[in-house]
Image 1 (cartoon, rainbow, N blue to C red):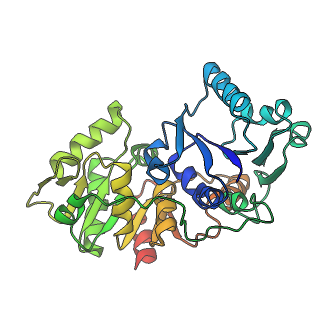
Image 2: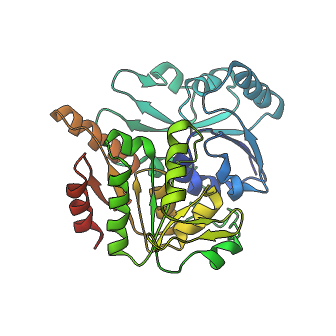
Image 3: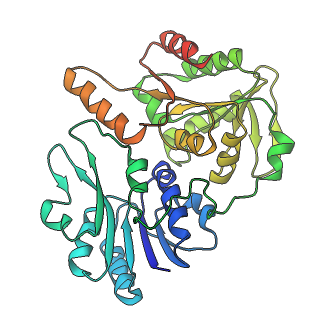
Length: 341
C-alpha cells in the first residue's frame, strides 16, 4: 500500500475528470492526501474519510513552502500532479526518490513543463494544445495507473453522499435543470428579458424547469440573483422553503444551491442544459443527458481549429449534443429546440 499525495487545486469541473483515477488509487493506498482549491473543495464530500488539505487555486509563496515541507516530512512514495501549476513540475527535480505522475501540456507557445523537467517524472501523459487529442484529459489521467493496477469503473472507493431530504419534499419529480452563468450570457449581450424568454422556452418543452445561478458573490451575479428571486418561483433547500408565483409557475429558481444539492438535482433530472463545464461533468458521472452551450467567436480558420482542440481535451468521449449561441435569442432557441427533442 503506497503513501500517495494528489495535487488537485483546480476547478470543480476538473475535479470530476479525476474522480475515477482517485477512486482507483484509493484501492491501493490507505494513506492518501488530496490538495483541493477554494473552487472545488465544496465537492470534497467524496473523500470524507481521507485527508483533505485546502490551498489556493493561485498558489501563494507560503503555500508553495507548505507543500514542499509536507513532501519533505511525509515522504510520499507517489505524487500525482493533476493540476497544471508550473511550481508542481519543479518538485520532481528536488524529490528524486519519489515517483511523480503527471499530465503535461504541449502548448501553442511553450510546453509545461519543458523537456528538461519532464525527464524527472516517473510517468506522464500529454495534452496537446497544438493538435486534436486522441484521448481527453479525463481519459489520459486514467492511463496514469501502473500496469498492475485496475481502473475503478464504478467509483466504489468514493463516498456516496446522502441526499438532502428537502429535495424530495420541495422539488418536482419531472424537470430539466439549467445552470445560468452571468459571464457567459453577458458575452452574448442577453438582457433580463432575453433570459426570461429562454426560460419560458424551456418550460414549453419540459414539465418543470429548475435553474440556478453563479455561486460567486459579486455585484453582477448578485444582481441576477435578486432578479431571479423576485421574478420566478423559488426553492431554498438550505432553509426548507418554497415560494411560488402564479405568473411563472413551473419555473423554479434554486436559491444559493450548494454543491452537494446540485450533485443530486442533476442526478434526478431528465436532462441538463448548461455552458460546458461542471454541469456536463456531473452529468457524465451520473449518465444523465446533457446539452452543452458554447459562445465561441469564430472569426477565422485558426479559431475553429483552436476550439476543436479544446473540445478534444475536455469533451471527447462524452457524446453530448451542443449548440453555438450568439446575440440572436430566437435563433439560439431554434438551434437548441432541434437538439433536445
